[in-house]
Image 1: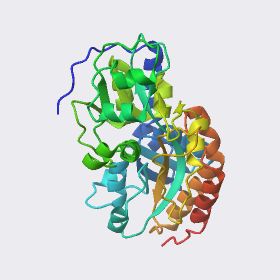
Image 2 (image 1 turned 90 degrees about the vertical axis):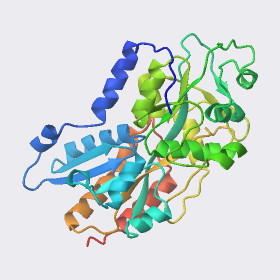
Image 3 (image 1 turned 30 degrees about the vertical axis):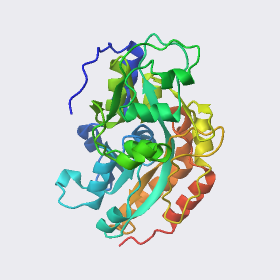
Length: 364
């Protein structure tokens, strides 16, 4: 499928600065990492979700400062690619990892493919937002469930469509073509968004369902990673796309207030996302999805994000280093979340996650 030919706007200086900050924060050069190595250094390699990558890179840098013999390398390649590398079949040497990250956890089939040697730890959480680019639109955009499902089903093509006007009375909406922006890679962010669409739209459920990779209807623009989608939204007049809240906030993108299960229009924030997350009951395997949270104050599209570990590792020092790193992340690391646009994991969840890590001492 091709891309639409929409007029592009030049990045504003603030957006350029934010985008460069994200790119700088999401990777470190190999020479920089190699310079830190000593004979007793432990290098932990991970790969996966882009959604939590801003927070994870902050954690890993902070942890290395206080634990200089632990070096963590994380490649934000998308949830699906992270799971592929974690399962570990037919990998190139540079693709081998000790842990992965996914916003979709792992399915039972994927767990079986990994020899059932899997521990899923909910490590952070956040909102998936609908960010948009309407340069001369100063009002707060509200989108009903029917409206945003219709946009991504390809049924609503103009910003002044009656369904959008209905939720924005008295507001002048432009007679402008809607450009949807979606992920081109296998993505946990896509999974979280489509889980919500699956819950609110019979048509979506019958045609697509929840998935990490979607053959999107219409002629959507496609970006790689949350940063790629956010960049396309920022440069494309008339665009709307789904992206992690932290990326939209970093780039100064406008985000819509979405109608939740109770009929309320709620903006994404730490408070509204946390309100949605506390309604979920965490099961024994620590895998839970909340596709359509109850509560008048709940933002409707939220997700946990999981670190994927092995229950046993061939080297005890690797197992111990991973356990200590992610116990620190569950406890001290949560303090970094709000300033970066993420949600502190609810206390009841961190307690279950820490117990799972502490009980996981089979080091091979």
